[in-house]
Image 1 (cartoon, rainbow, N blue to C red):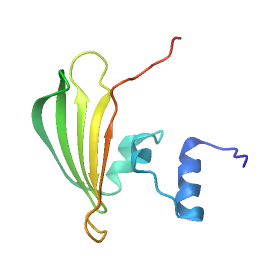
Image 2 (image 1 turned 135 degrees about the vertical axis):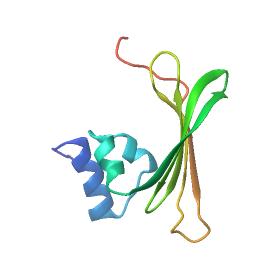
Image 3 (image 1 turned 30 degrees about the vertical axis):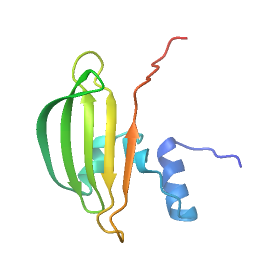
Image 4 (image 1 turned 45 degrees about the vertical axis):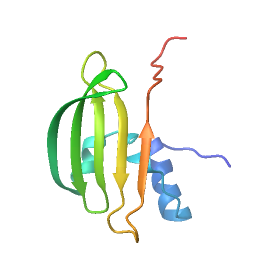
Length: 108
């Protein structure tokens, strides 16, 4: 299948036209702030935590469809290291967990 357009449009089309959802898509939109502002109910900075030996900032976000927790590297590049998403409106409140520990930014 060929697709022409932005990453934002791709995720929108997959969700709306094909009923496919990708939990990490919200972090990949071109303007993450706008994506969260539309559905954000509350947010809280819970402090610094160490995750796999890396100092991180831990944030908790409540949105209309899901509760998020995200751990962002505190030193060096502010990259997400881990996040959980709990789908509070779905039966059984399923949870998605992602661990992002081998980033490669540019270069070879």
